[in-house]
Amino acid sequence: MSCQTDFIRELRERGFRLTAQREMVLGVLHEMAGFATADEIYRRVHALSSAVDISTVYRTLDLLQGFSLIAMVEGGDGQRRYRLLIDHVSHAHLVCVACGAVTGAGLDTLQPMLDEIRSHYGFVVDPGHLNLSGWCPQCCEKQAVKASLSHVA
Amino acid sequence: MSCQTDFIRELRERGFRLTAQREMVLGVLHEMAGFATADEIYRRVHALSSAVDISTVYRTLDLLQGFSLIAMVEGGDGQRRYRLLIDHVSHAHLVCVACGAVTGAGLDTLQPMLDEIRSHYGFVVDPGHLNLSGWCPQCCEKQAVKASLSHVA
DNA sequence: ATGCCTGCAAACCGTTTGCATCCAC
DNA sequence: GTGGATGCAAACGGTTTGCAGGCAT
Image (cartoon, rainbow over all chains, first blue to last red; front, side, top):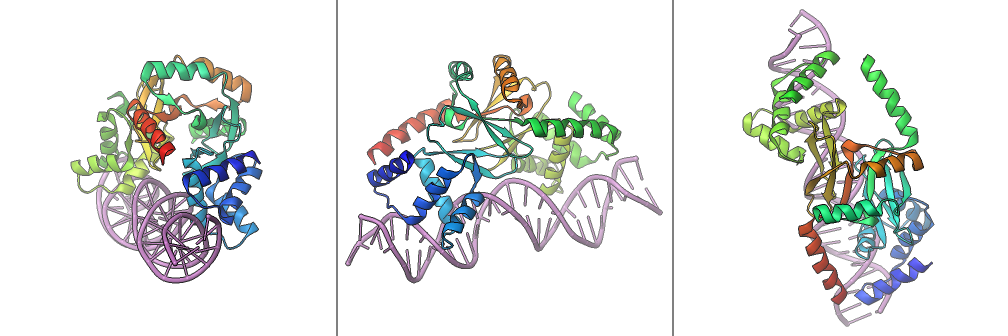
């Protein structure tokens, strides 16, 4: 619930209003384990109260991003996925380009590399948006199958 | 030009046809230094021959992806960017979430990390699609300015 | 009472697809 | 000649925006 109070405090401090819709979007994000698309979030909010529009979901997600309370990744399927950033900041995200699944990975092993990139290229990798594209174990296998097939065909 | 022959050979082997449009798309990709959006590619091809459609560009890009001859990254702006994979395989891509700029980074320093991810999570990061999101030096500065402003507002 | 937020619906933009025509094979 | 490839245009799906009304402040 700490995120809830963070959110409300941020809202108040910046002169935004607290509405039932914004609470619901945050609530849904809070009870979801991993990443979710805007539409998935919309559906769950809509189940709570049918009078919530998808545009409000997007606007609230924008707001939450502005507060750095959520992370956003671009899936390989053209859909964006969102996730709350409550003490998940120290995680990298392994995004499967085949099925869109997102797995968490400890950031500690990656930190030396990020520092190296920073000093080499002046490029600051955002730890909250550190997304590595590739294949999850399941799709990795499928990919191997597909590759062998395309050699035949 | 080696990519050209690779492409033609792949086409022939798989029973696809060699057309002027496909050659032009490949040619444009070849003469471009970095990543480009489908629209940028389209404009350059269209400049060569006005009778080329954007849909053909997309279809050719799909084809090239099928042959693993190009890499695709999802920019933070919702546009996909493409790039030829001629001896550029050993590069990671630093994608700026603010301006969409893509910088290359040597893969050698990152390889140990990729191996670790593979053994830890069974997740195979695709070296050809290794995209790290963050801020390029220019936008990094702007971001810092914006952050300080939002504290005031 | 004020004006920020909302729902509605339409616009938007990148991408995909159906179909008649065309051309590489 | 045949079927894959193309151009055209319309559809598509996720996201954004304009606007009149509603509700938190």
